[in-house]
Every structure is written in C-alpha cells, then in structure tokens.
Image (cartoon, rainbow, N blue to C red; front, side, top):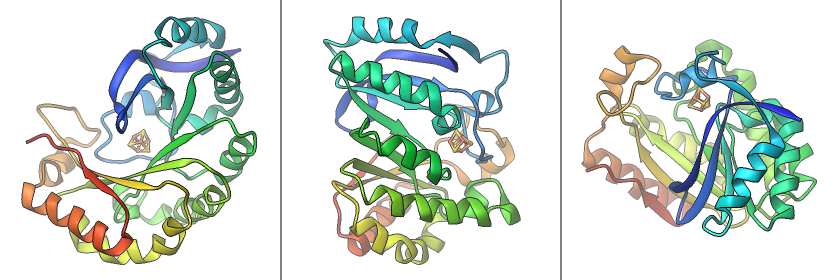
Amino acid sequence: MKVSIAGFKELSLIDVHGHTSFTLWFCGCNLMCPFCHNWRLAMNDPEVCREEDVDEIISMLSVSSPLVEYLHITGGEPLLQLEPLIDLYVKSKSIGVLNSLNTNLTMPTQLEALLSQNLIEHLATDLKIPFPEMSGLGSLSERPWAHFMQSLNVLKKYRVVVELRIPVAKNITLKYLRDYLNKVGDFISDLWGVYVVVNPLIGAPMLSPRNPAWAEQYCNPDVSEVEEVARVVKEVLGVKVYTKKWW
Ligand code: SF4
C-alpha cells in the first residue's frame, strides 16, 4: 500500500515528550495555520511530497526499532490517509513498536475508526487559541472547531496518553486563554494520562512559516508571556505542564 509522505527521521528526541521516536511526516492537511512551518507538505507540494510503500517504511522502522519507543506519525493531517495510517500502525505493532499520532483533531469519524482498533498509545494535538485565527480558517472555522470538540469526546473513551500542546502566539494566546480552557476543561479532565506542553511559536529566521507577515507580528513571544501561559494552564486544568524552551 502506498502513502503520500514528505519524509521521516529515524531517531527523534523531540516529537513525543520524554520519549524517542521514528517520526514520519504525512502530506496533506485540512487547516491553514498561519504559523505552520510544514505548510508545503500540508499543501501536497509535489516538490516535497512523494509516494512511499508502507512496507518500505516498516523495513526502515525495523532497523531503528532497537533505539525508538514510538512510531510517531505527524503531518500534515495523518487522518486524511486513514487506510495507510492503519496499515502502518498494525505493522509497527507487530514488530514491537508503540504508536503515536499527531492530529489536529478535526476528523472525529476517522479518529474513532482508528482508536476503536486499539492501535495507538499516544496522541498529540494542538489547542489552537483562538481557533478561527490560529487555524487560518477565520469565519469558516465553526465546523472544524465543533469537530475538535467532538474528537475530544471520542478520545475520552479510549486509554491513550494525550499530549495537549498549546502554541503560544505573542499578544494573542494569553488574551483568550482562560476562555478556551474553560470551554475544553471538562473534556480534558476526562482524558486518560493527559499532560500539556506549552509551545512558544518560532518564526524566521529559525523557521519559515506559511504567513511571514503574521509570524513577524505574533511569533517569538516573550519568556514572561510563555511562563504566564504555563501558570494559567496549570491553575485552570490542574495537570502536569511542560514548557518547550528555545531561550
Ligand atoms: S494543522 Fe498542523 S500541519 Fe496543518 S496547517 Fe496547522 S500546523 Fe500545519
């Protein structure tokens, strides 16, 4: 079976918090986040995306398997290619590797189809605050946001460790933070093994985000702002909070 990917990293120390992974980037995405630095693969750019055979990927994973704990599949939005996604997870499990998915949680039907097969142990997602701005969809974001909430409902039925990432945009995130935490708080408290990673958004010159003008204005928040986001998240959600540090 073939899958459209942009590439993989045989050994990553940063994609699953506190664990090693073989990380694989799927192509295609249904959101348009202005800070996205994977926007070319998200748009299926033929210069960065290629068709790869699932069995080829598994044979490369098996070489790395003594060193990695997880197969971490990210994108893009991996649930857009559900069939090869499931095939990869079935085969990685058969060689003793745990499975991790990074998803934007806007495809609840596909999510349930995957989770109901008990194939993944870890799931990472962003809580984009505020969703219309951070998803890049503006007035078209109502339905995907409803799907995000629906996906949280699906997720709480399964025993999967959840890494909830909060991207921090300068002068935006803090303004809407409590409002959004209150919206999702009840769902989050029902999740199994949930922790939060506060993730300050990085712009140029380190990365090349989709919307350079937006990134110039809102990326690279002050340390004090990032620390305040972490403090409020801990206070409201009462879960373990880690902060990604680039300073
Ligand atoms: S959901 Fe992820 S891959 Fe898709 S546009 Fe947003 S940041 Fe990029």
